[in-house]
Image 1 (cartoon, rainbow, N blue to C red):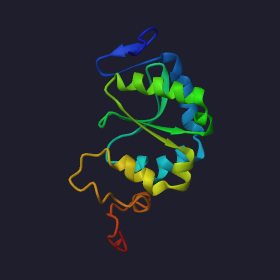
Image 2: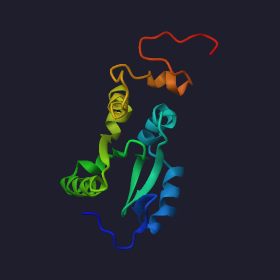
Image 3: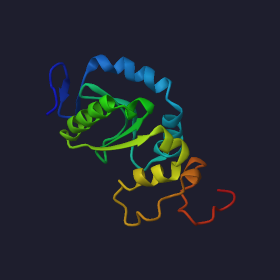
Length: 155
């Protein structure tokens, strides 16, 4: 399903359009408020490496975790329009053709319902205790406590 024309191929990484590399680097320097919040409060301390603004195929995805084969897209208001939703559906199918899972969240969800978004992201981990992921705010502070566990002073 992916369009391979003009893509850089290797058995070591997913196909990508080299022309998007510079743009992706620039986008990393200017994340949206929602992207910044998700990165700083969750993904930067995620148990698996997560890349920001990663070219895959002819797209730049917001976040990509190779270990989980997971793409996370943070959608702004423009994605509410029907034409954008159709494009997003096609884009998701192309990404899924690479064996990737695509998680879409909105800016409003990240900014207003962060813990729900955090739990949706955490659910992709293959942990024995998924029902009790670490507290996202404790992770940001450098603690790896579980929800409901007290933080130990001095750590």
